[in-house]
Length: 188
Ligand SMILES: N[C@@H](CCC(=O)N[C@@H](CS)C(=O)NCC(=O)O)C(=O)O
Figure 1 (tube, rainbow, N blue to C red):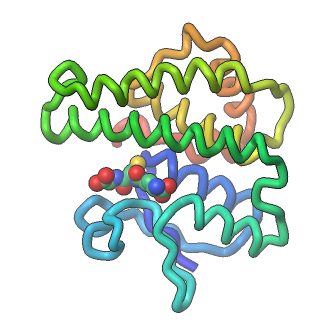
Figure 2: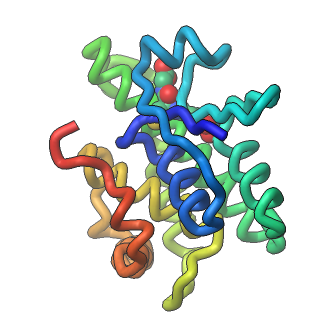
């Protein structure tokens, strides 16, 4: 099994954590935008190749890994809802990030990006009200959220000061050695 991805992507990080949790054997292949454009029809990371099987989205990869390890993917409906909401907010934040970084398009230049930014803010406020946990291991919905929050802080896309429950979740996640071992590098 081979997982293709970057060390900075929060989507890839979630897969790397689940690989470490399950102990499944998998080679990690660092992949940049040029390589992912050649190797995956979605031109994104992560993607996973296992024999004849190619999986092109982290959601499917996570389900595949959990089930391969004999675990249930999302036994709890509301945790799945949290996971889906994080994906929506994270996709919007990543979209804003790439447009600024690659094309120098700022949120204020585009009505649609203002809508995306509004989605990030209302999503974070809602997620802040749904997070209640003080123990590890985190569920996949909580883990997804922690991967997103850490990436958002790392890329200076989000400020957790107005969201104390989210800040607490991130502090808790950082007590998990598998979470800290997969943190984005200081100088990507
Ligand atoms: N729905 C995808 C999203 C993955 C994604 O957005 N990956 C980013 C890296 S953080 C990417 O490869 N972006 C490249 C691009 O948008 O061109 C998943 O869950 O795997």
